[in-house]
Length: 184
Ligand code: NI
Image (cartoon, protein in one colour):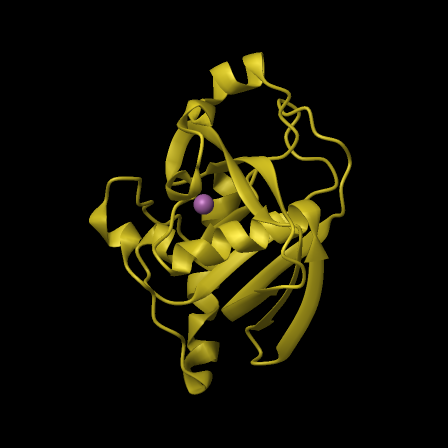
């Protein structure tokens, strides 16, 4: 039975460190950790992703899942859904210099939202729990989620990427006063 893992929140210095890669021969030993991360993510309601450092594990490991329709409190248009993906040692490259602004939230930054610029088109790669290598292309919201989650592995929270700090605020205020298109 997987257990919910304790979460780390903004201000905890541990969140700002660079996480270590997982050695190829150790991938299989992370199955229980991933099960607990999935359990933790699901116990938080309709959230999109969780990176290992957010639960105090400083390894390059991320899980995410993009539903067809995110939580109803956000005025989102329909978007590409992505099944639960476990990424070990992910890498990403921008396929275009183009960036776009979009709203983000984070389990480690409770009740808040902010507007962040992200690449619109990326290629990313990762290993799965079986040690198989995967490569994908992503655009739009999918690309945004991957960039947000991979940032956690380098000790970067979305709040650190906000250029216009007037866009950082309580979720209740932001959704009441802005047209909120996406959320990670
Ligand atoms: Ni986050």
